[in-house]
Length: 159
Length: 159
DNA sequence: AACCTAGCTTTAATTTTAGAAGTCAGTCAA
DNA sequence: TTGACTGACTTCTAAAATTAAAGCTAGGTT
Image (tube, rainbow over all chains, first blue to last red; front, side):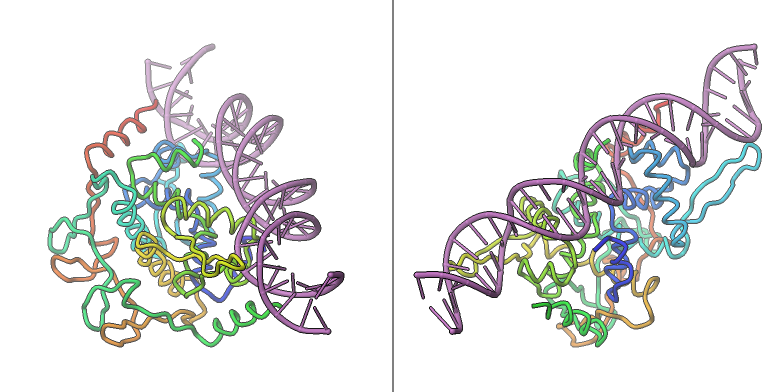
């Protein structure tokens, strides 16, 4: 199976992984959330090759995650900005950051977060909207849809 | 810059991306959270090649994300389980799932979540622990540590 | 006139990955 | 007690992705 096949699976984790599940795309998203918008700044801040950056930006633009817009006609100059779809990836990047801070960090937290609403420097966490309590792997259970369940059963049956 | 360089950056998003930022690793994590533990089941459920799976599992084991344990001495059989470090990736996978559901899905949600604490079928969300309000890209602001700020300044200065 | 900048694209070499096939230890069934 | 089978891999080779370096375009600056 090529990686293209992932994007046609029922599972939306697979689809999301096919689109944004690679380290350079994650680096680009980090930069976007830190306020970077220009090609050369992405290059400098991520250290990736221009070829790769160009390809990734195209992929993200095609998917609707980023939008390319001219900020100068003469000379022609472009910048990249997250669309609403792109901004919705914030929890993904923040979750990665928090995991990295906790398990891969040096004690210092390179990126702190200020909640504009209340002004606090804070680390958001996953909570259950029903009861308001924090939620994690231990107190949750996955429930598969019929379609996804069937797909998995079929895969399991190849004897 | 090779990808190895990402894992030595100050930024913990970069470090996390270097370790779990690839689509197959994300598929493995999804399977772990769905209760898969055995080599061949990972193969069948993800569709990846055995070579890749073997390499990824080794990388994850070396990093401490999964633990390999014999569940049978004779014949020797092994299974893979998430460590605490691995289980801590739950918010990352769930965030991806939610984003996929919202932006890449068919309307149906392949994986539903039950909060064991209150029994509700729910979609957890990021909230600020200080004020309890939901938090997203719009109402947050990044604040860089001195070290990370300096690293970025240096990168920006290559004229 | 000569050089600079931003935003790329092209090319060639290198590295990584995919897929198929093979290995190995042990079990089971005849 | 041979022969097929299972789980968990490893090896091999072709195909694909990535890198570094250079080049290009459309202007701007000294």
